[in-house]
Image (cartoon, rainbow, N blue to C red; front, side, top):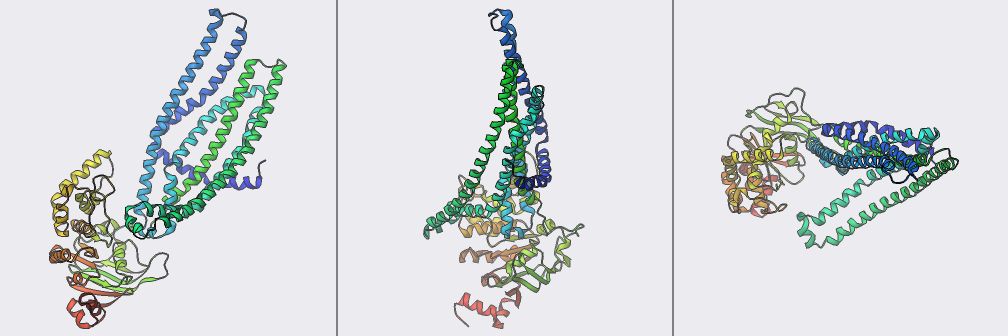
Length: 629
């Protein structure tokens, strides 16, 4: 029995999914429209074949009935053999088309998967940096990635099944109508309960998936902790394996129980719907047998009716189930489209101003106010700072003072809530973001360890400026390899500037050595060596503005001293900003600014700040001399 109170909200939900269905079809069409046309053509032919087979079955049965008692003469057997040959041909054609459709569908689905991968990767690389500090963003990304790679393909297959089965269903209805106009209606009624079950539980499955997303992500995180090399040492040292396994299993048990409960309820509902279908099938079959006993239909008609009704019921059920699956897949694809619809707030102006290629005046932070998204804490309040062009400026201060925030604002990873930042008097918001970032090179405090060759690790400082945007995989590989070879002299020079030349020259294949342990043949580096590679990557960029966040934090004192001796010549003529806790590094600067709680509290050169006896002098004494002044 169908519950109208449950059916009406479900129908409203179906109507609400129609825009997503249109987007999904457009997505598939954009990714693989040629294959889609071939696939639709195959489906139409496949949809017509069962009807032809049913008609041939009736002719074969009637021919056999007439031939009974006629002997096995060639004249009696030839028509039967002809019909058998036709049926064998149709069966062979069905198998051939099924194989061809599988091949076409696979090619189409692979193209769709790759296209969606590009969409997600592009969106992930263009949304605001602030999104990556939001749990809600990670929930959205998780749901999009979880469903995106198979839901469009499943939607495609369901849609194809609806098309093929609808054609078959029309053929079966045409067969049944001569026996009684009420038979197609009986087919529909027998399958409606199953359709209702599919719709109802598709919605519940989607709601469960949304509700379980945070737990799924947390389970993934615990699994990552237990299986990655990044945490392996500490897991063993503190004996944390059992602890995180228990947490992982507790979440998995909760997720598993929720899923099993839903599947059990769906199974019971499907049993009830199946019972209703069997009852109607029994009634219609008994009616047809009664007519055969009365001589009103032939045995061929009875065989035709049984096949047509039985197949029609199966096809009708398949059509309705496929419609339910389309609805289900559309529900889950809403996660993908919701993610792709995220709009960045840090955007380019409609008419960007030309960016200065060489700084003449410098950088100014004017009355900046900034709080991180989702935080009530003000990171910067009425902040002002001038960094003259061509100078080396060091910014020192305790953790949380706001030093790294300045880097993020200058690179336009965020925009301030108030005030402005200018380059030679031009507001950053009036410049194209890509042009601004090409003007800047940054060594972050925790640089990325790319699992690539040493040469490519350094070349990534500039290779993104002219990255390949298309072509076959081997063509892109050759282009990148050619680009790295072309850059080889600059790569070596950058390695020498960043102090990475010595550790690289000790590697088995020097600059061609694969770094990292993710892939076969890789060689790992120490923390200080990785930092020198990242520093070389920053220097290769030859940007007008150089930002170094704790550039020597992972270096030993000998490596630091060697690097500092060359530093001023390396950045000569360019504007350099150093974020550091090490006063031996800050001493190289033309100007040192001391930050405390989002404000500049002292400024000057090293000797002058020591003479002031303020915060800088006290920290110097503690760090370098090891005494309290």
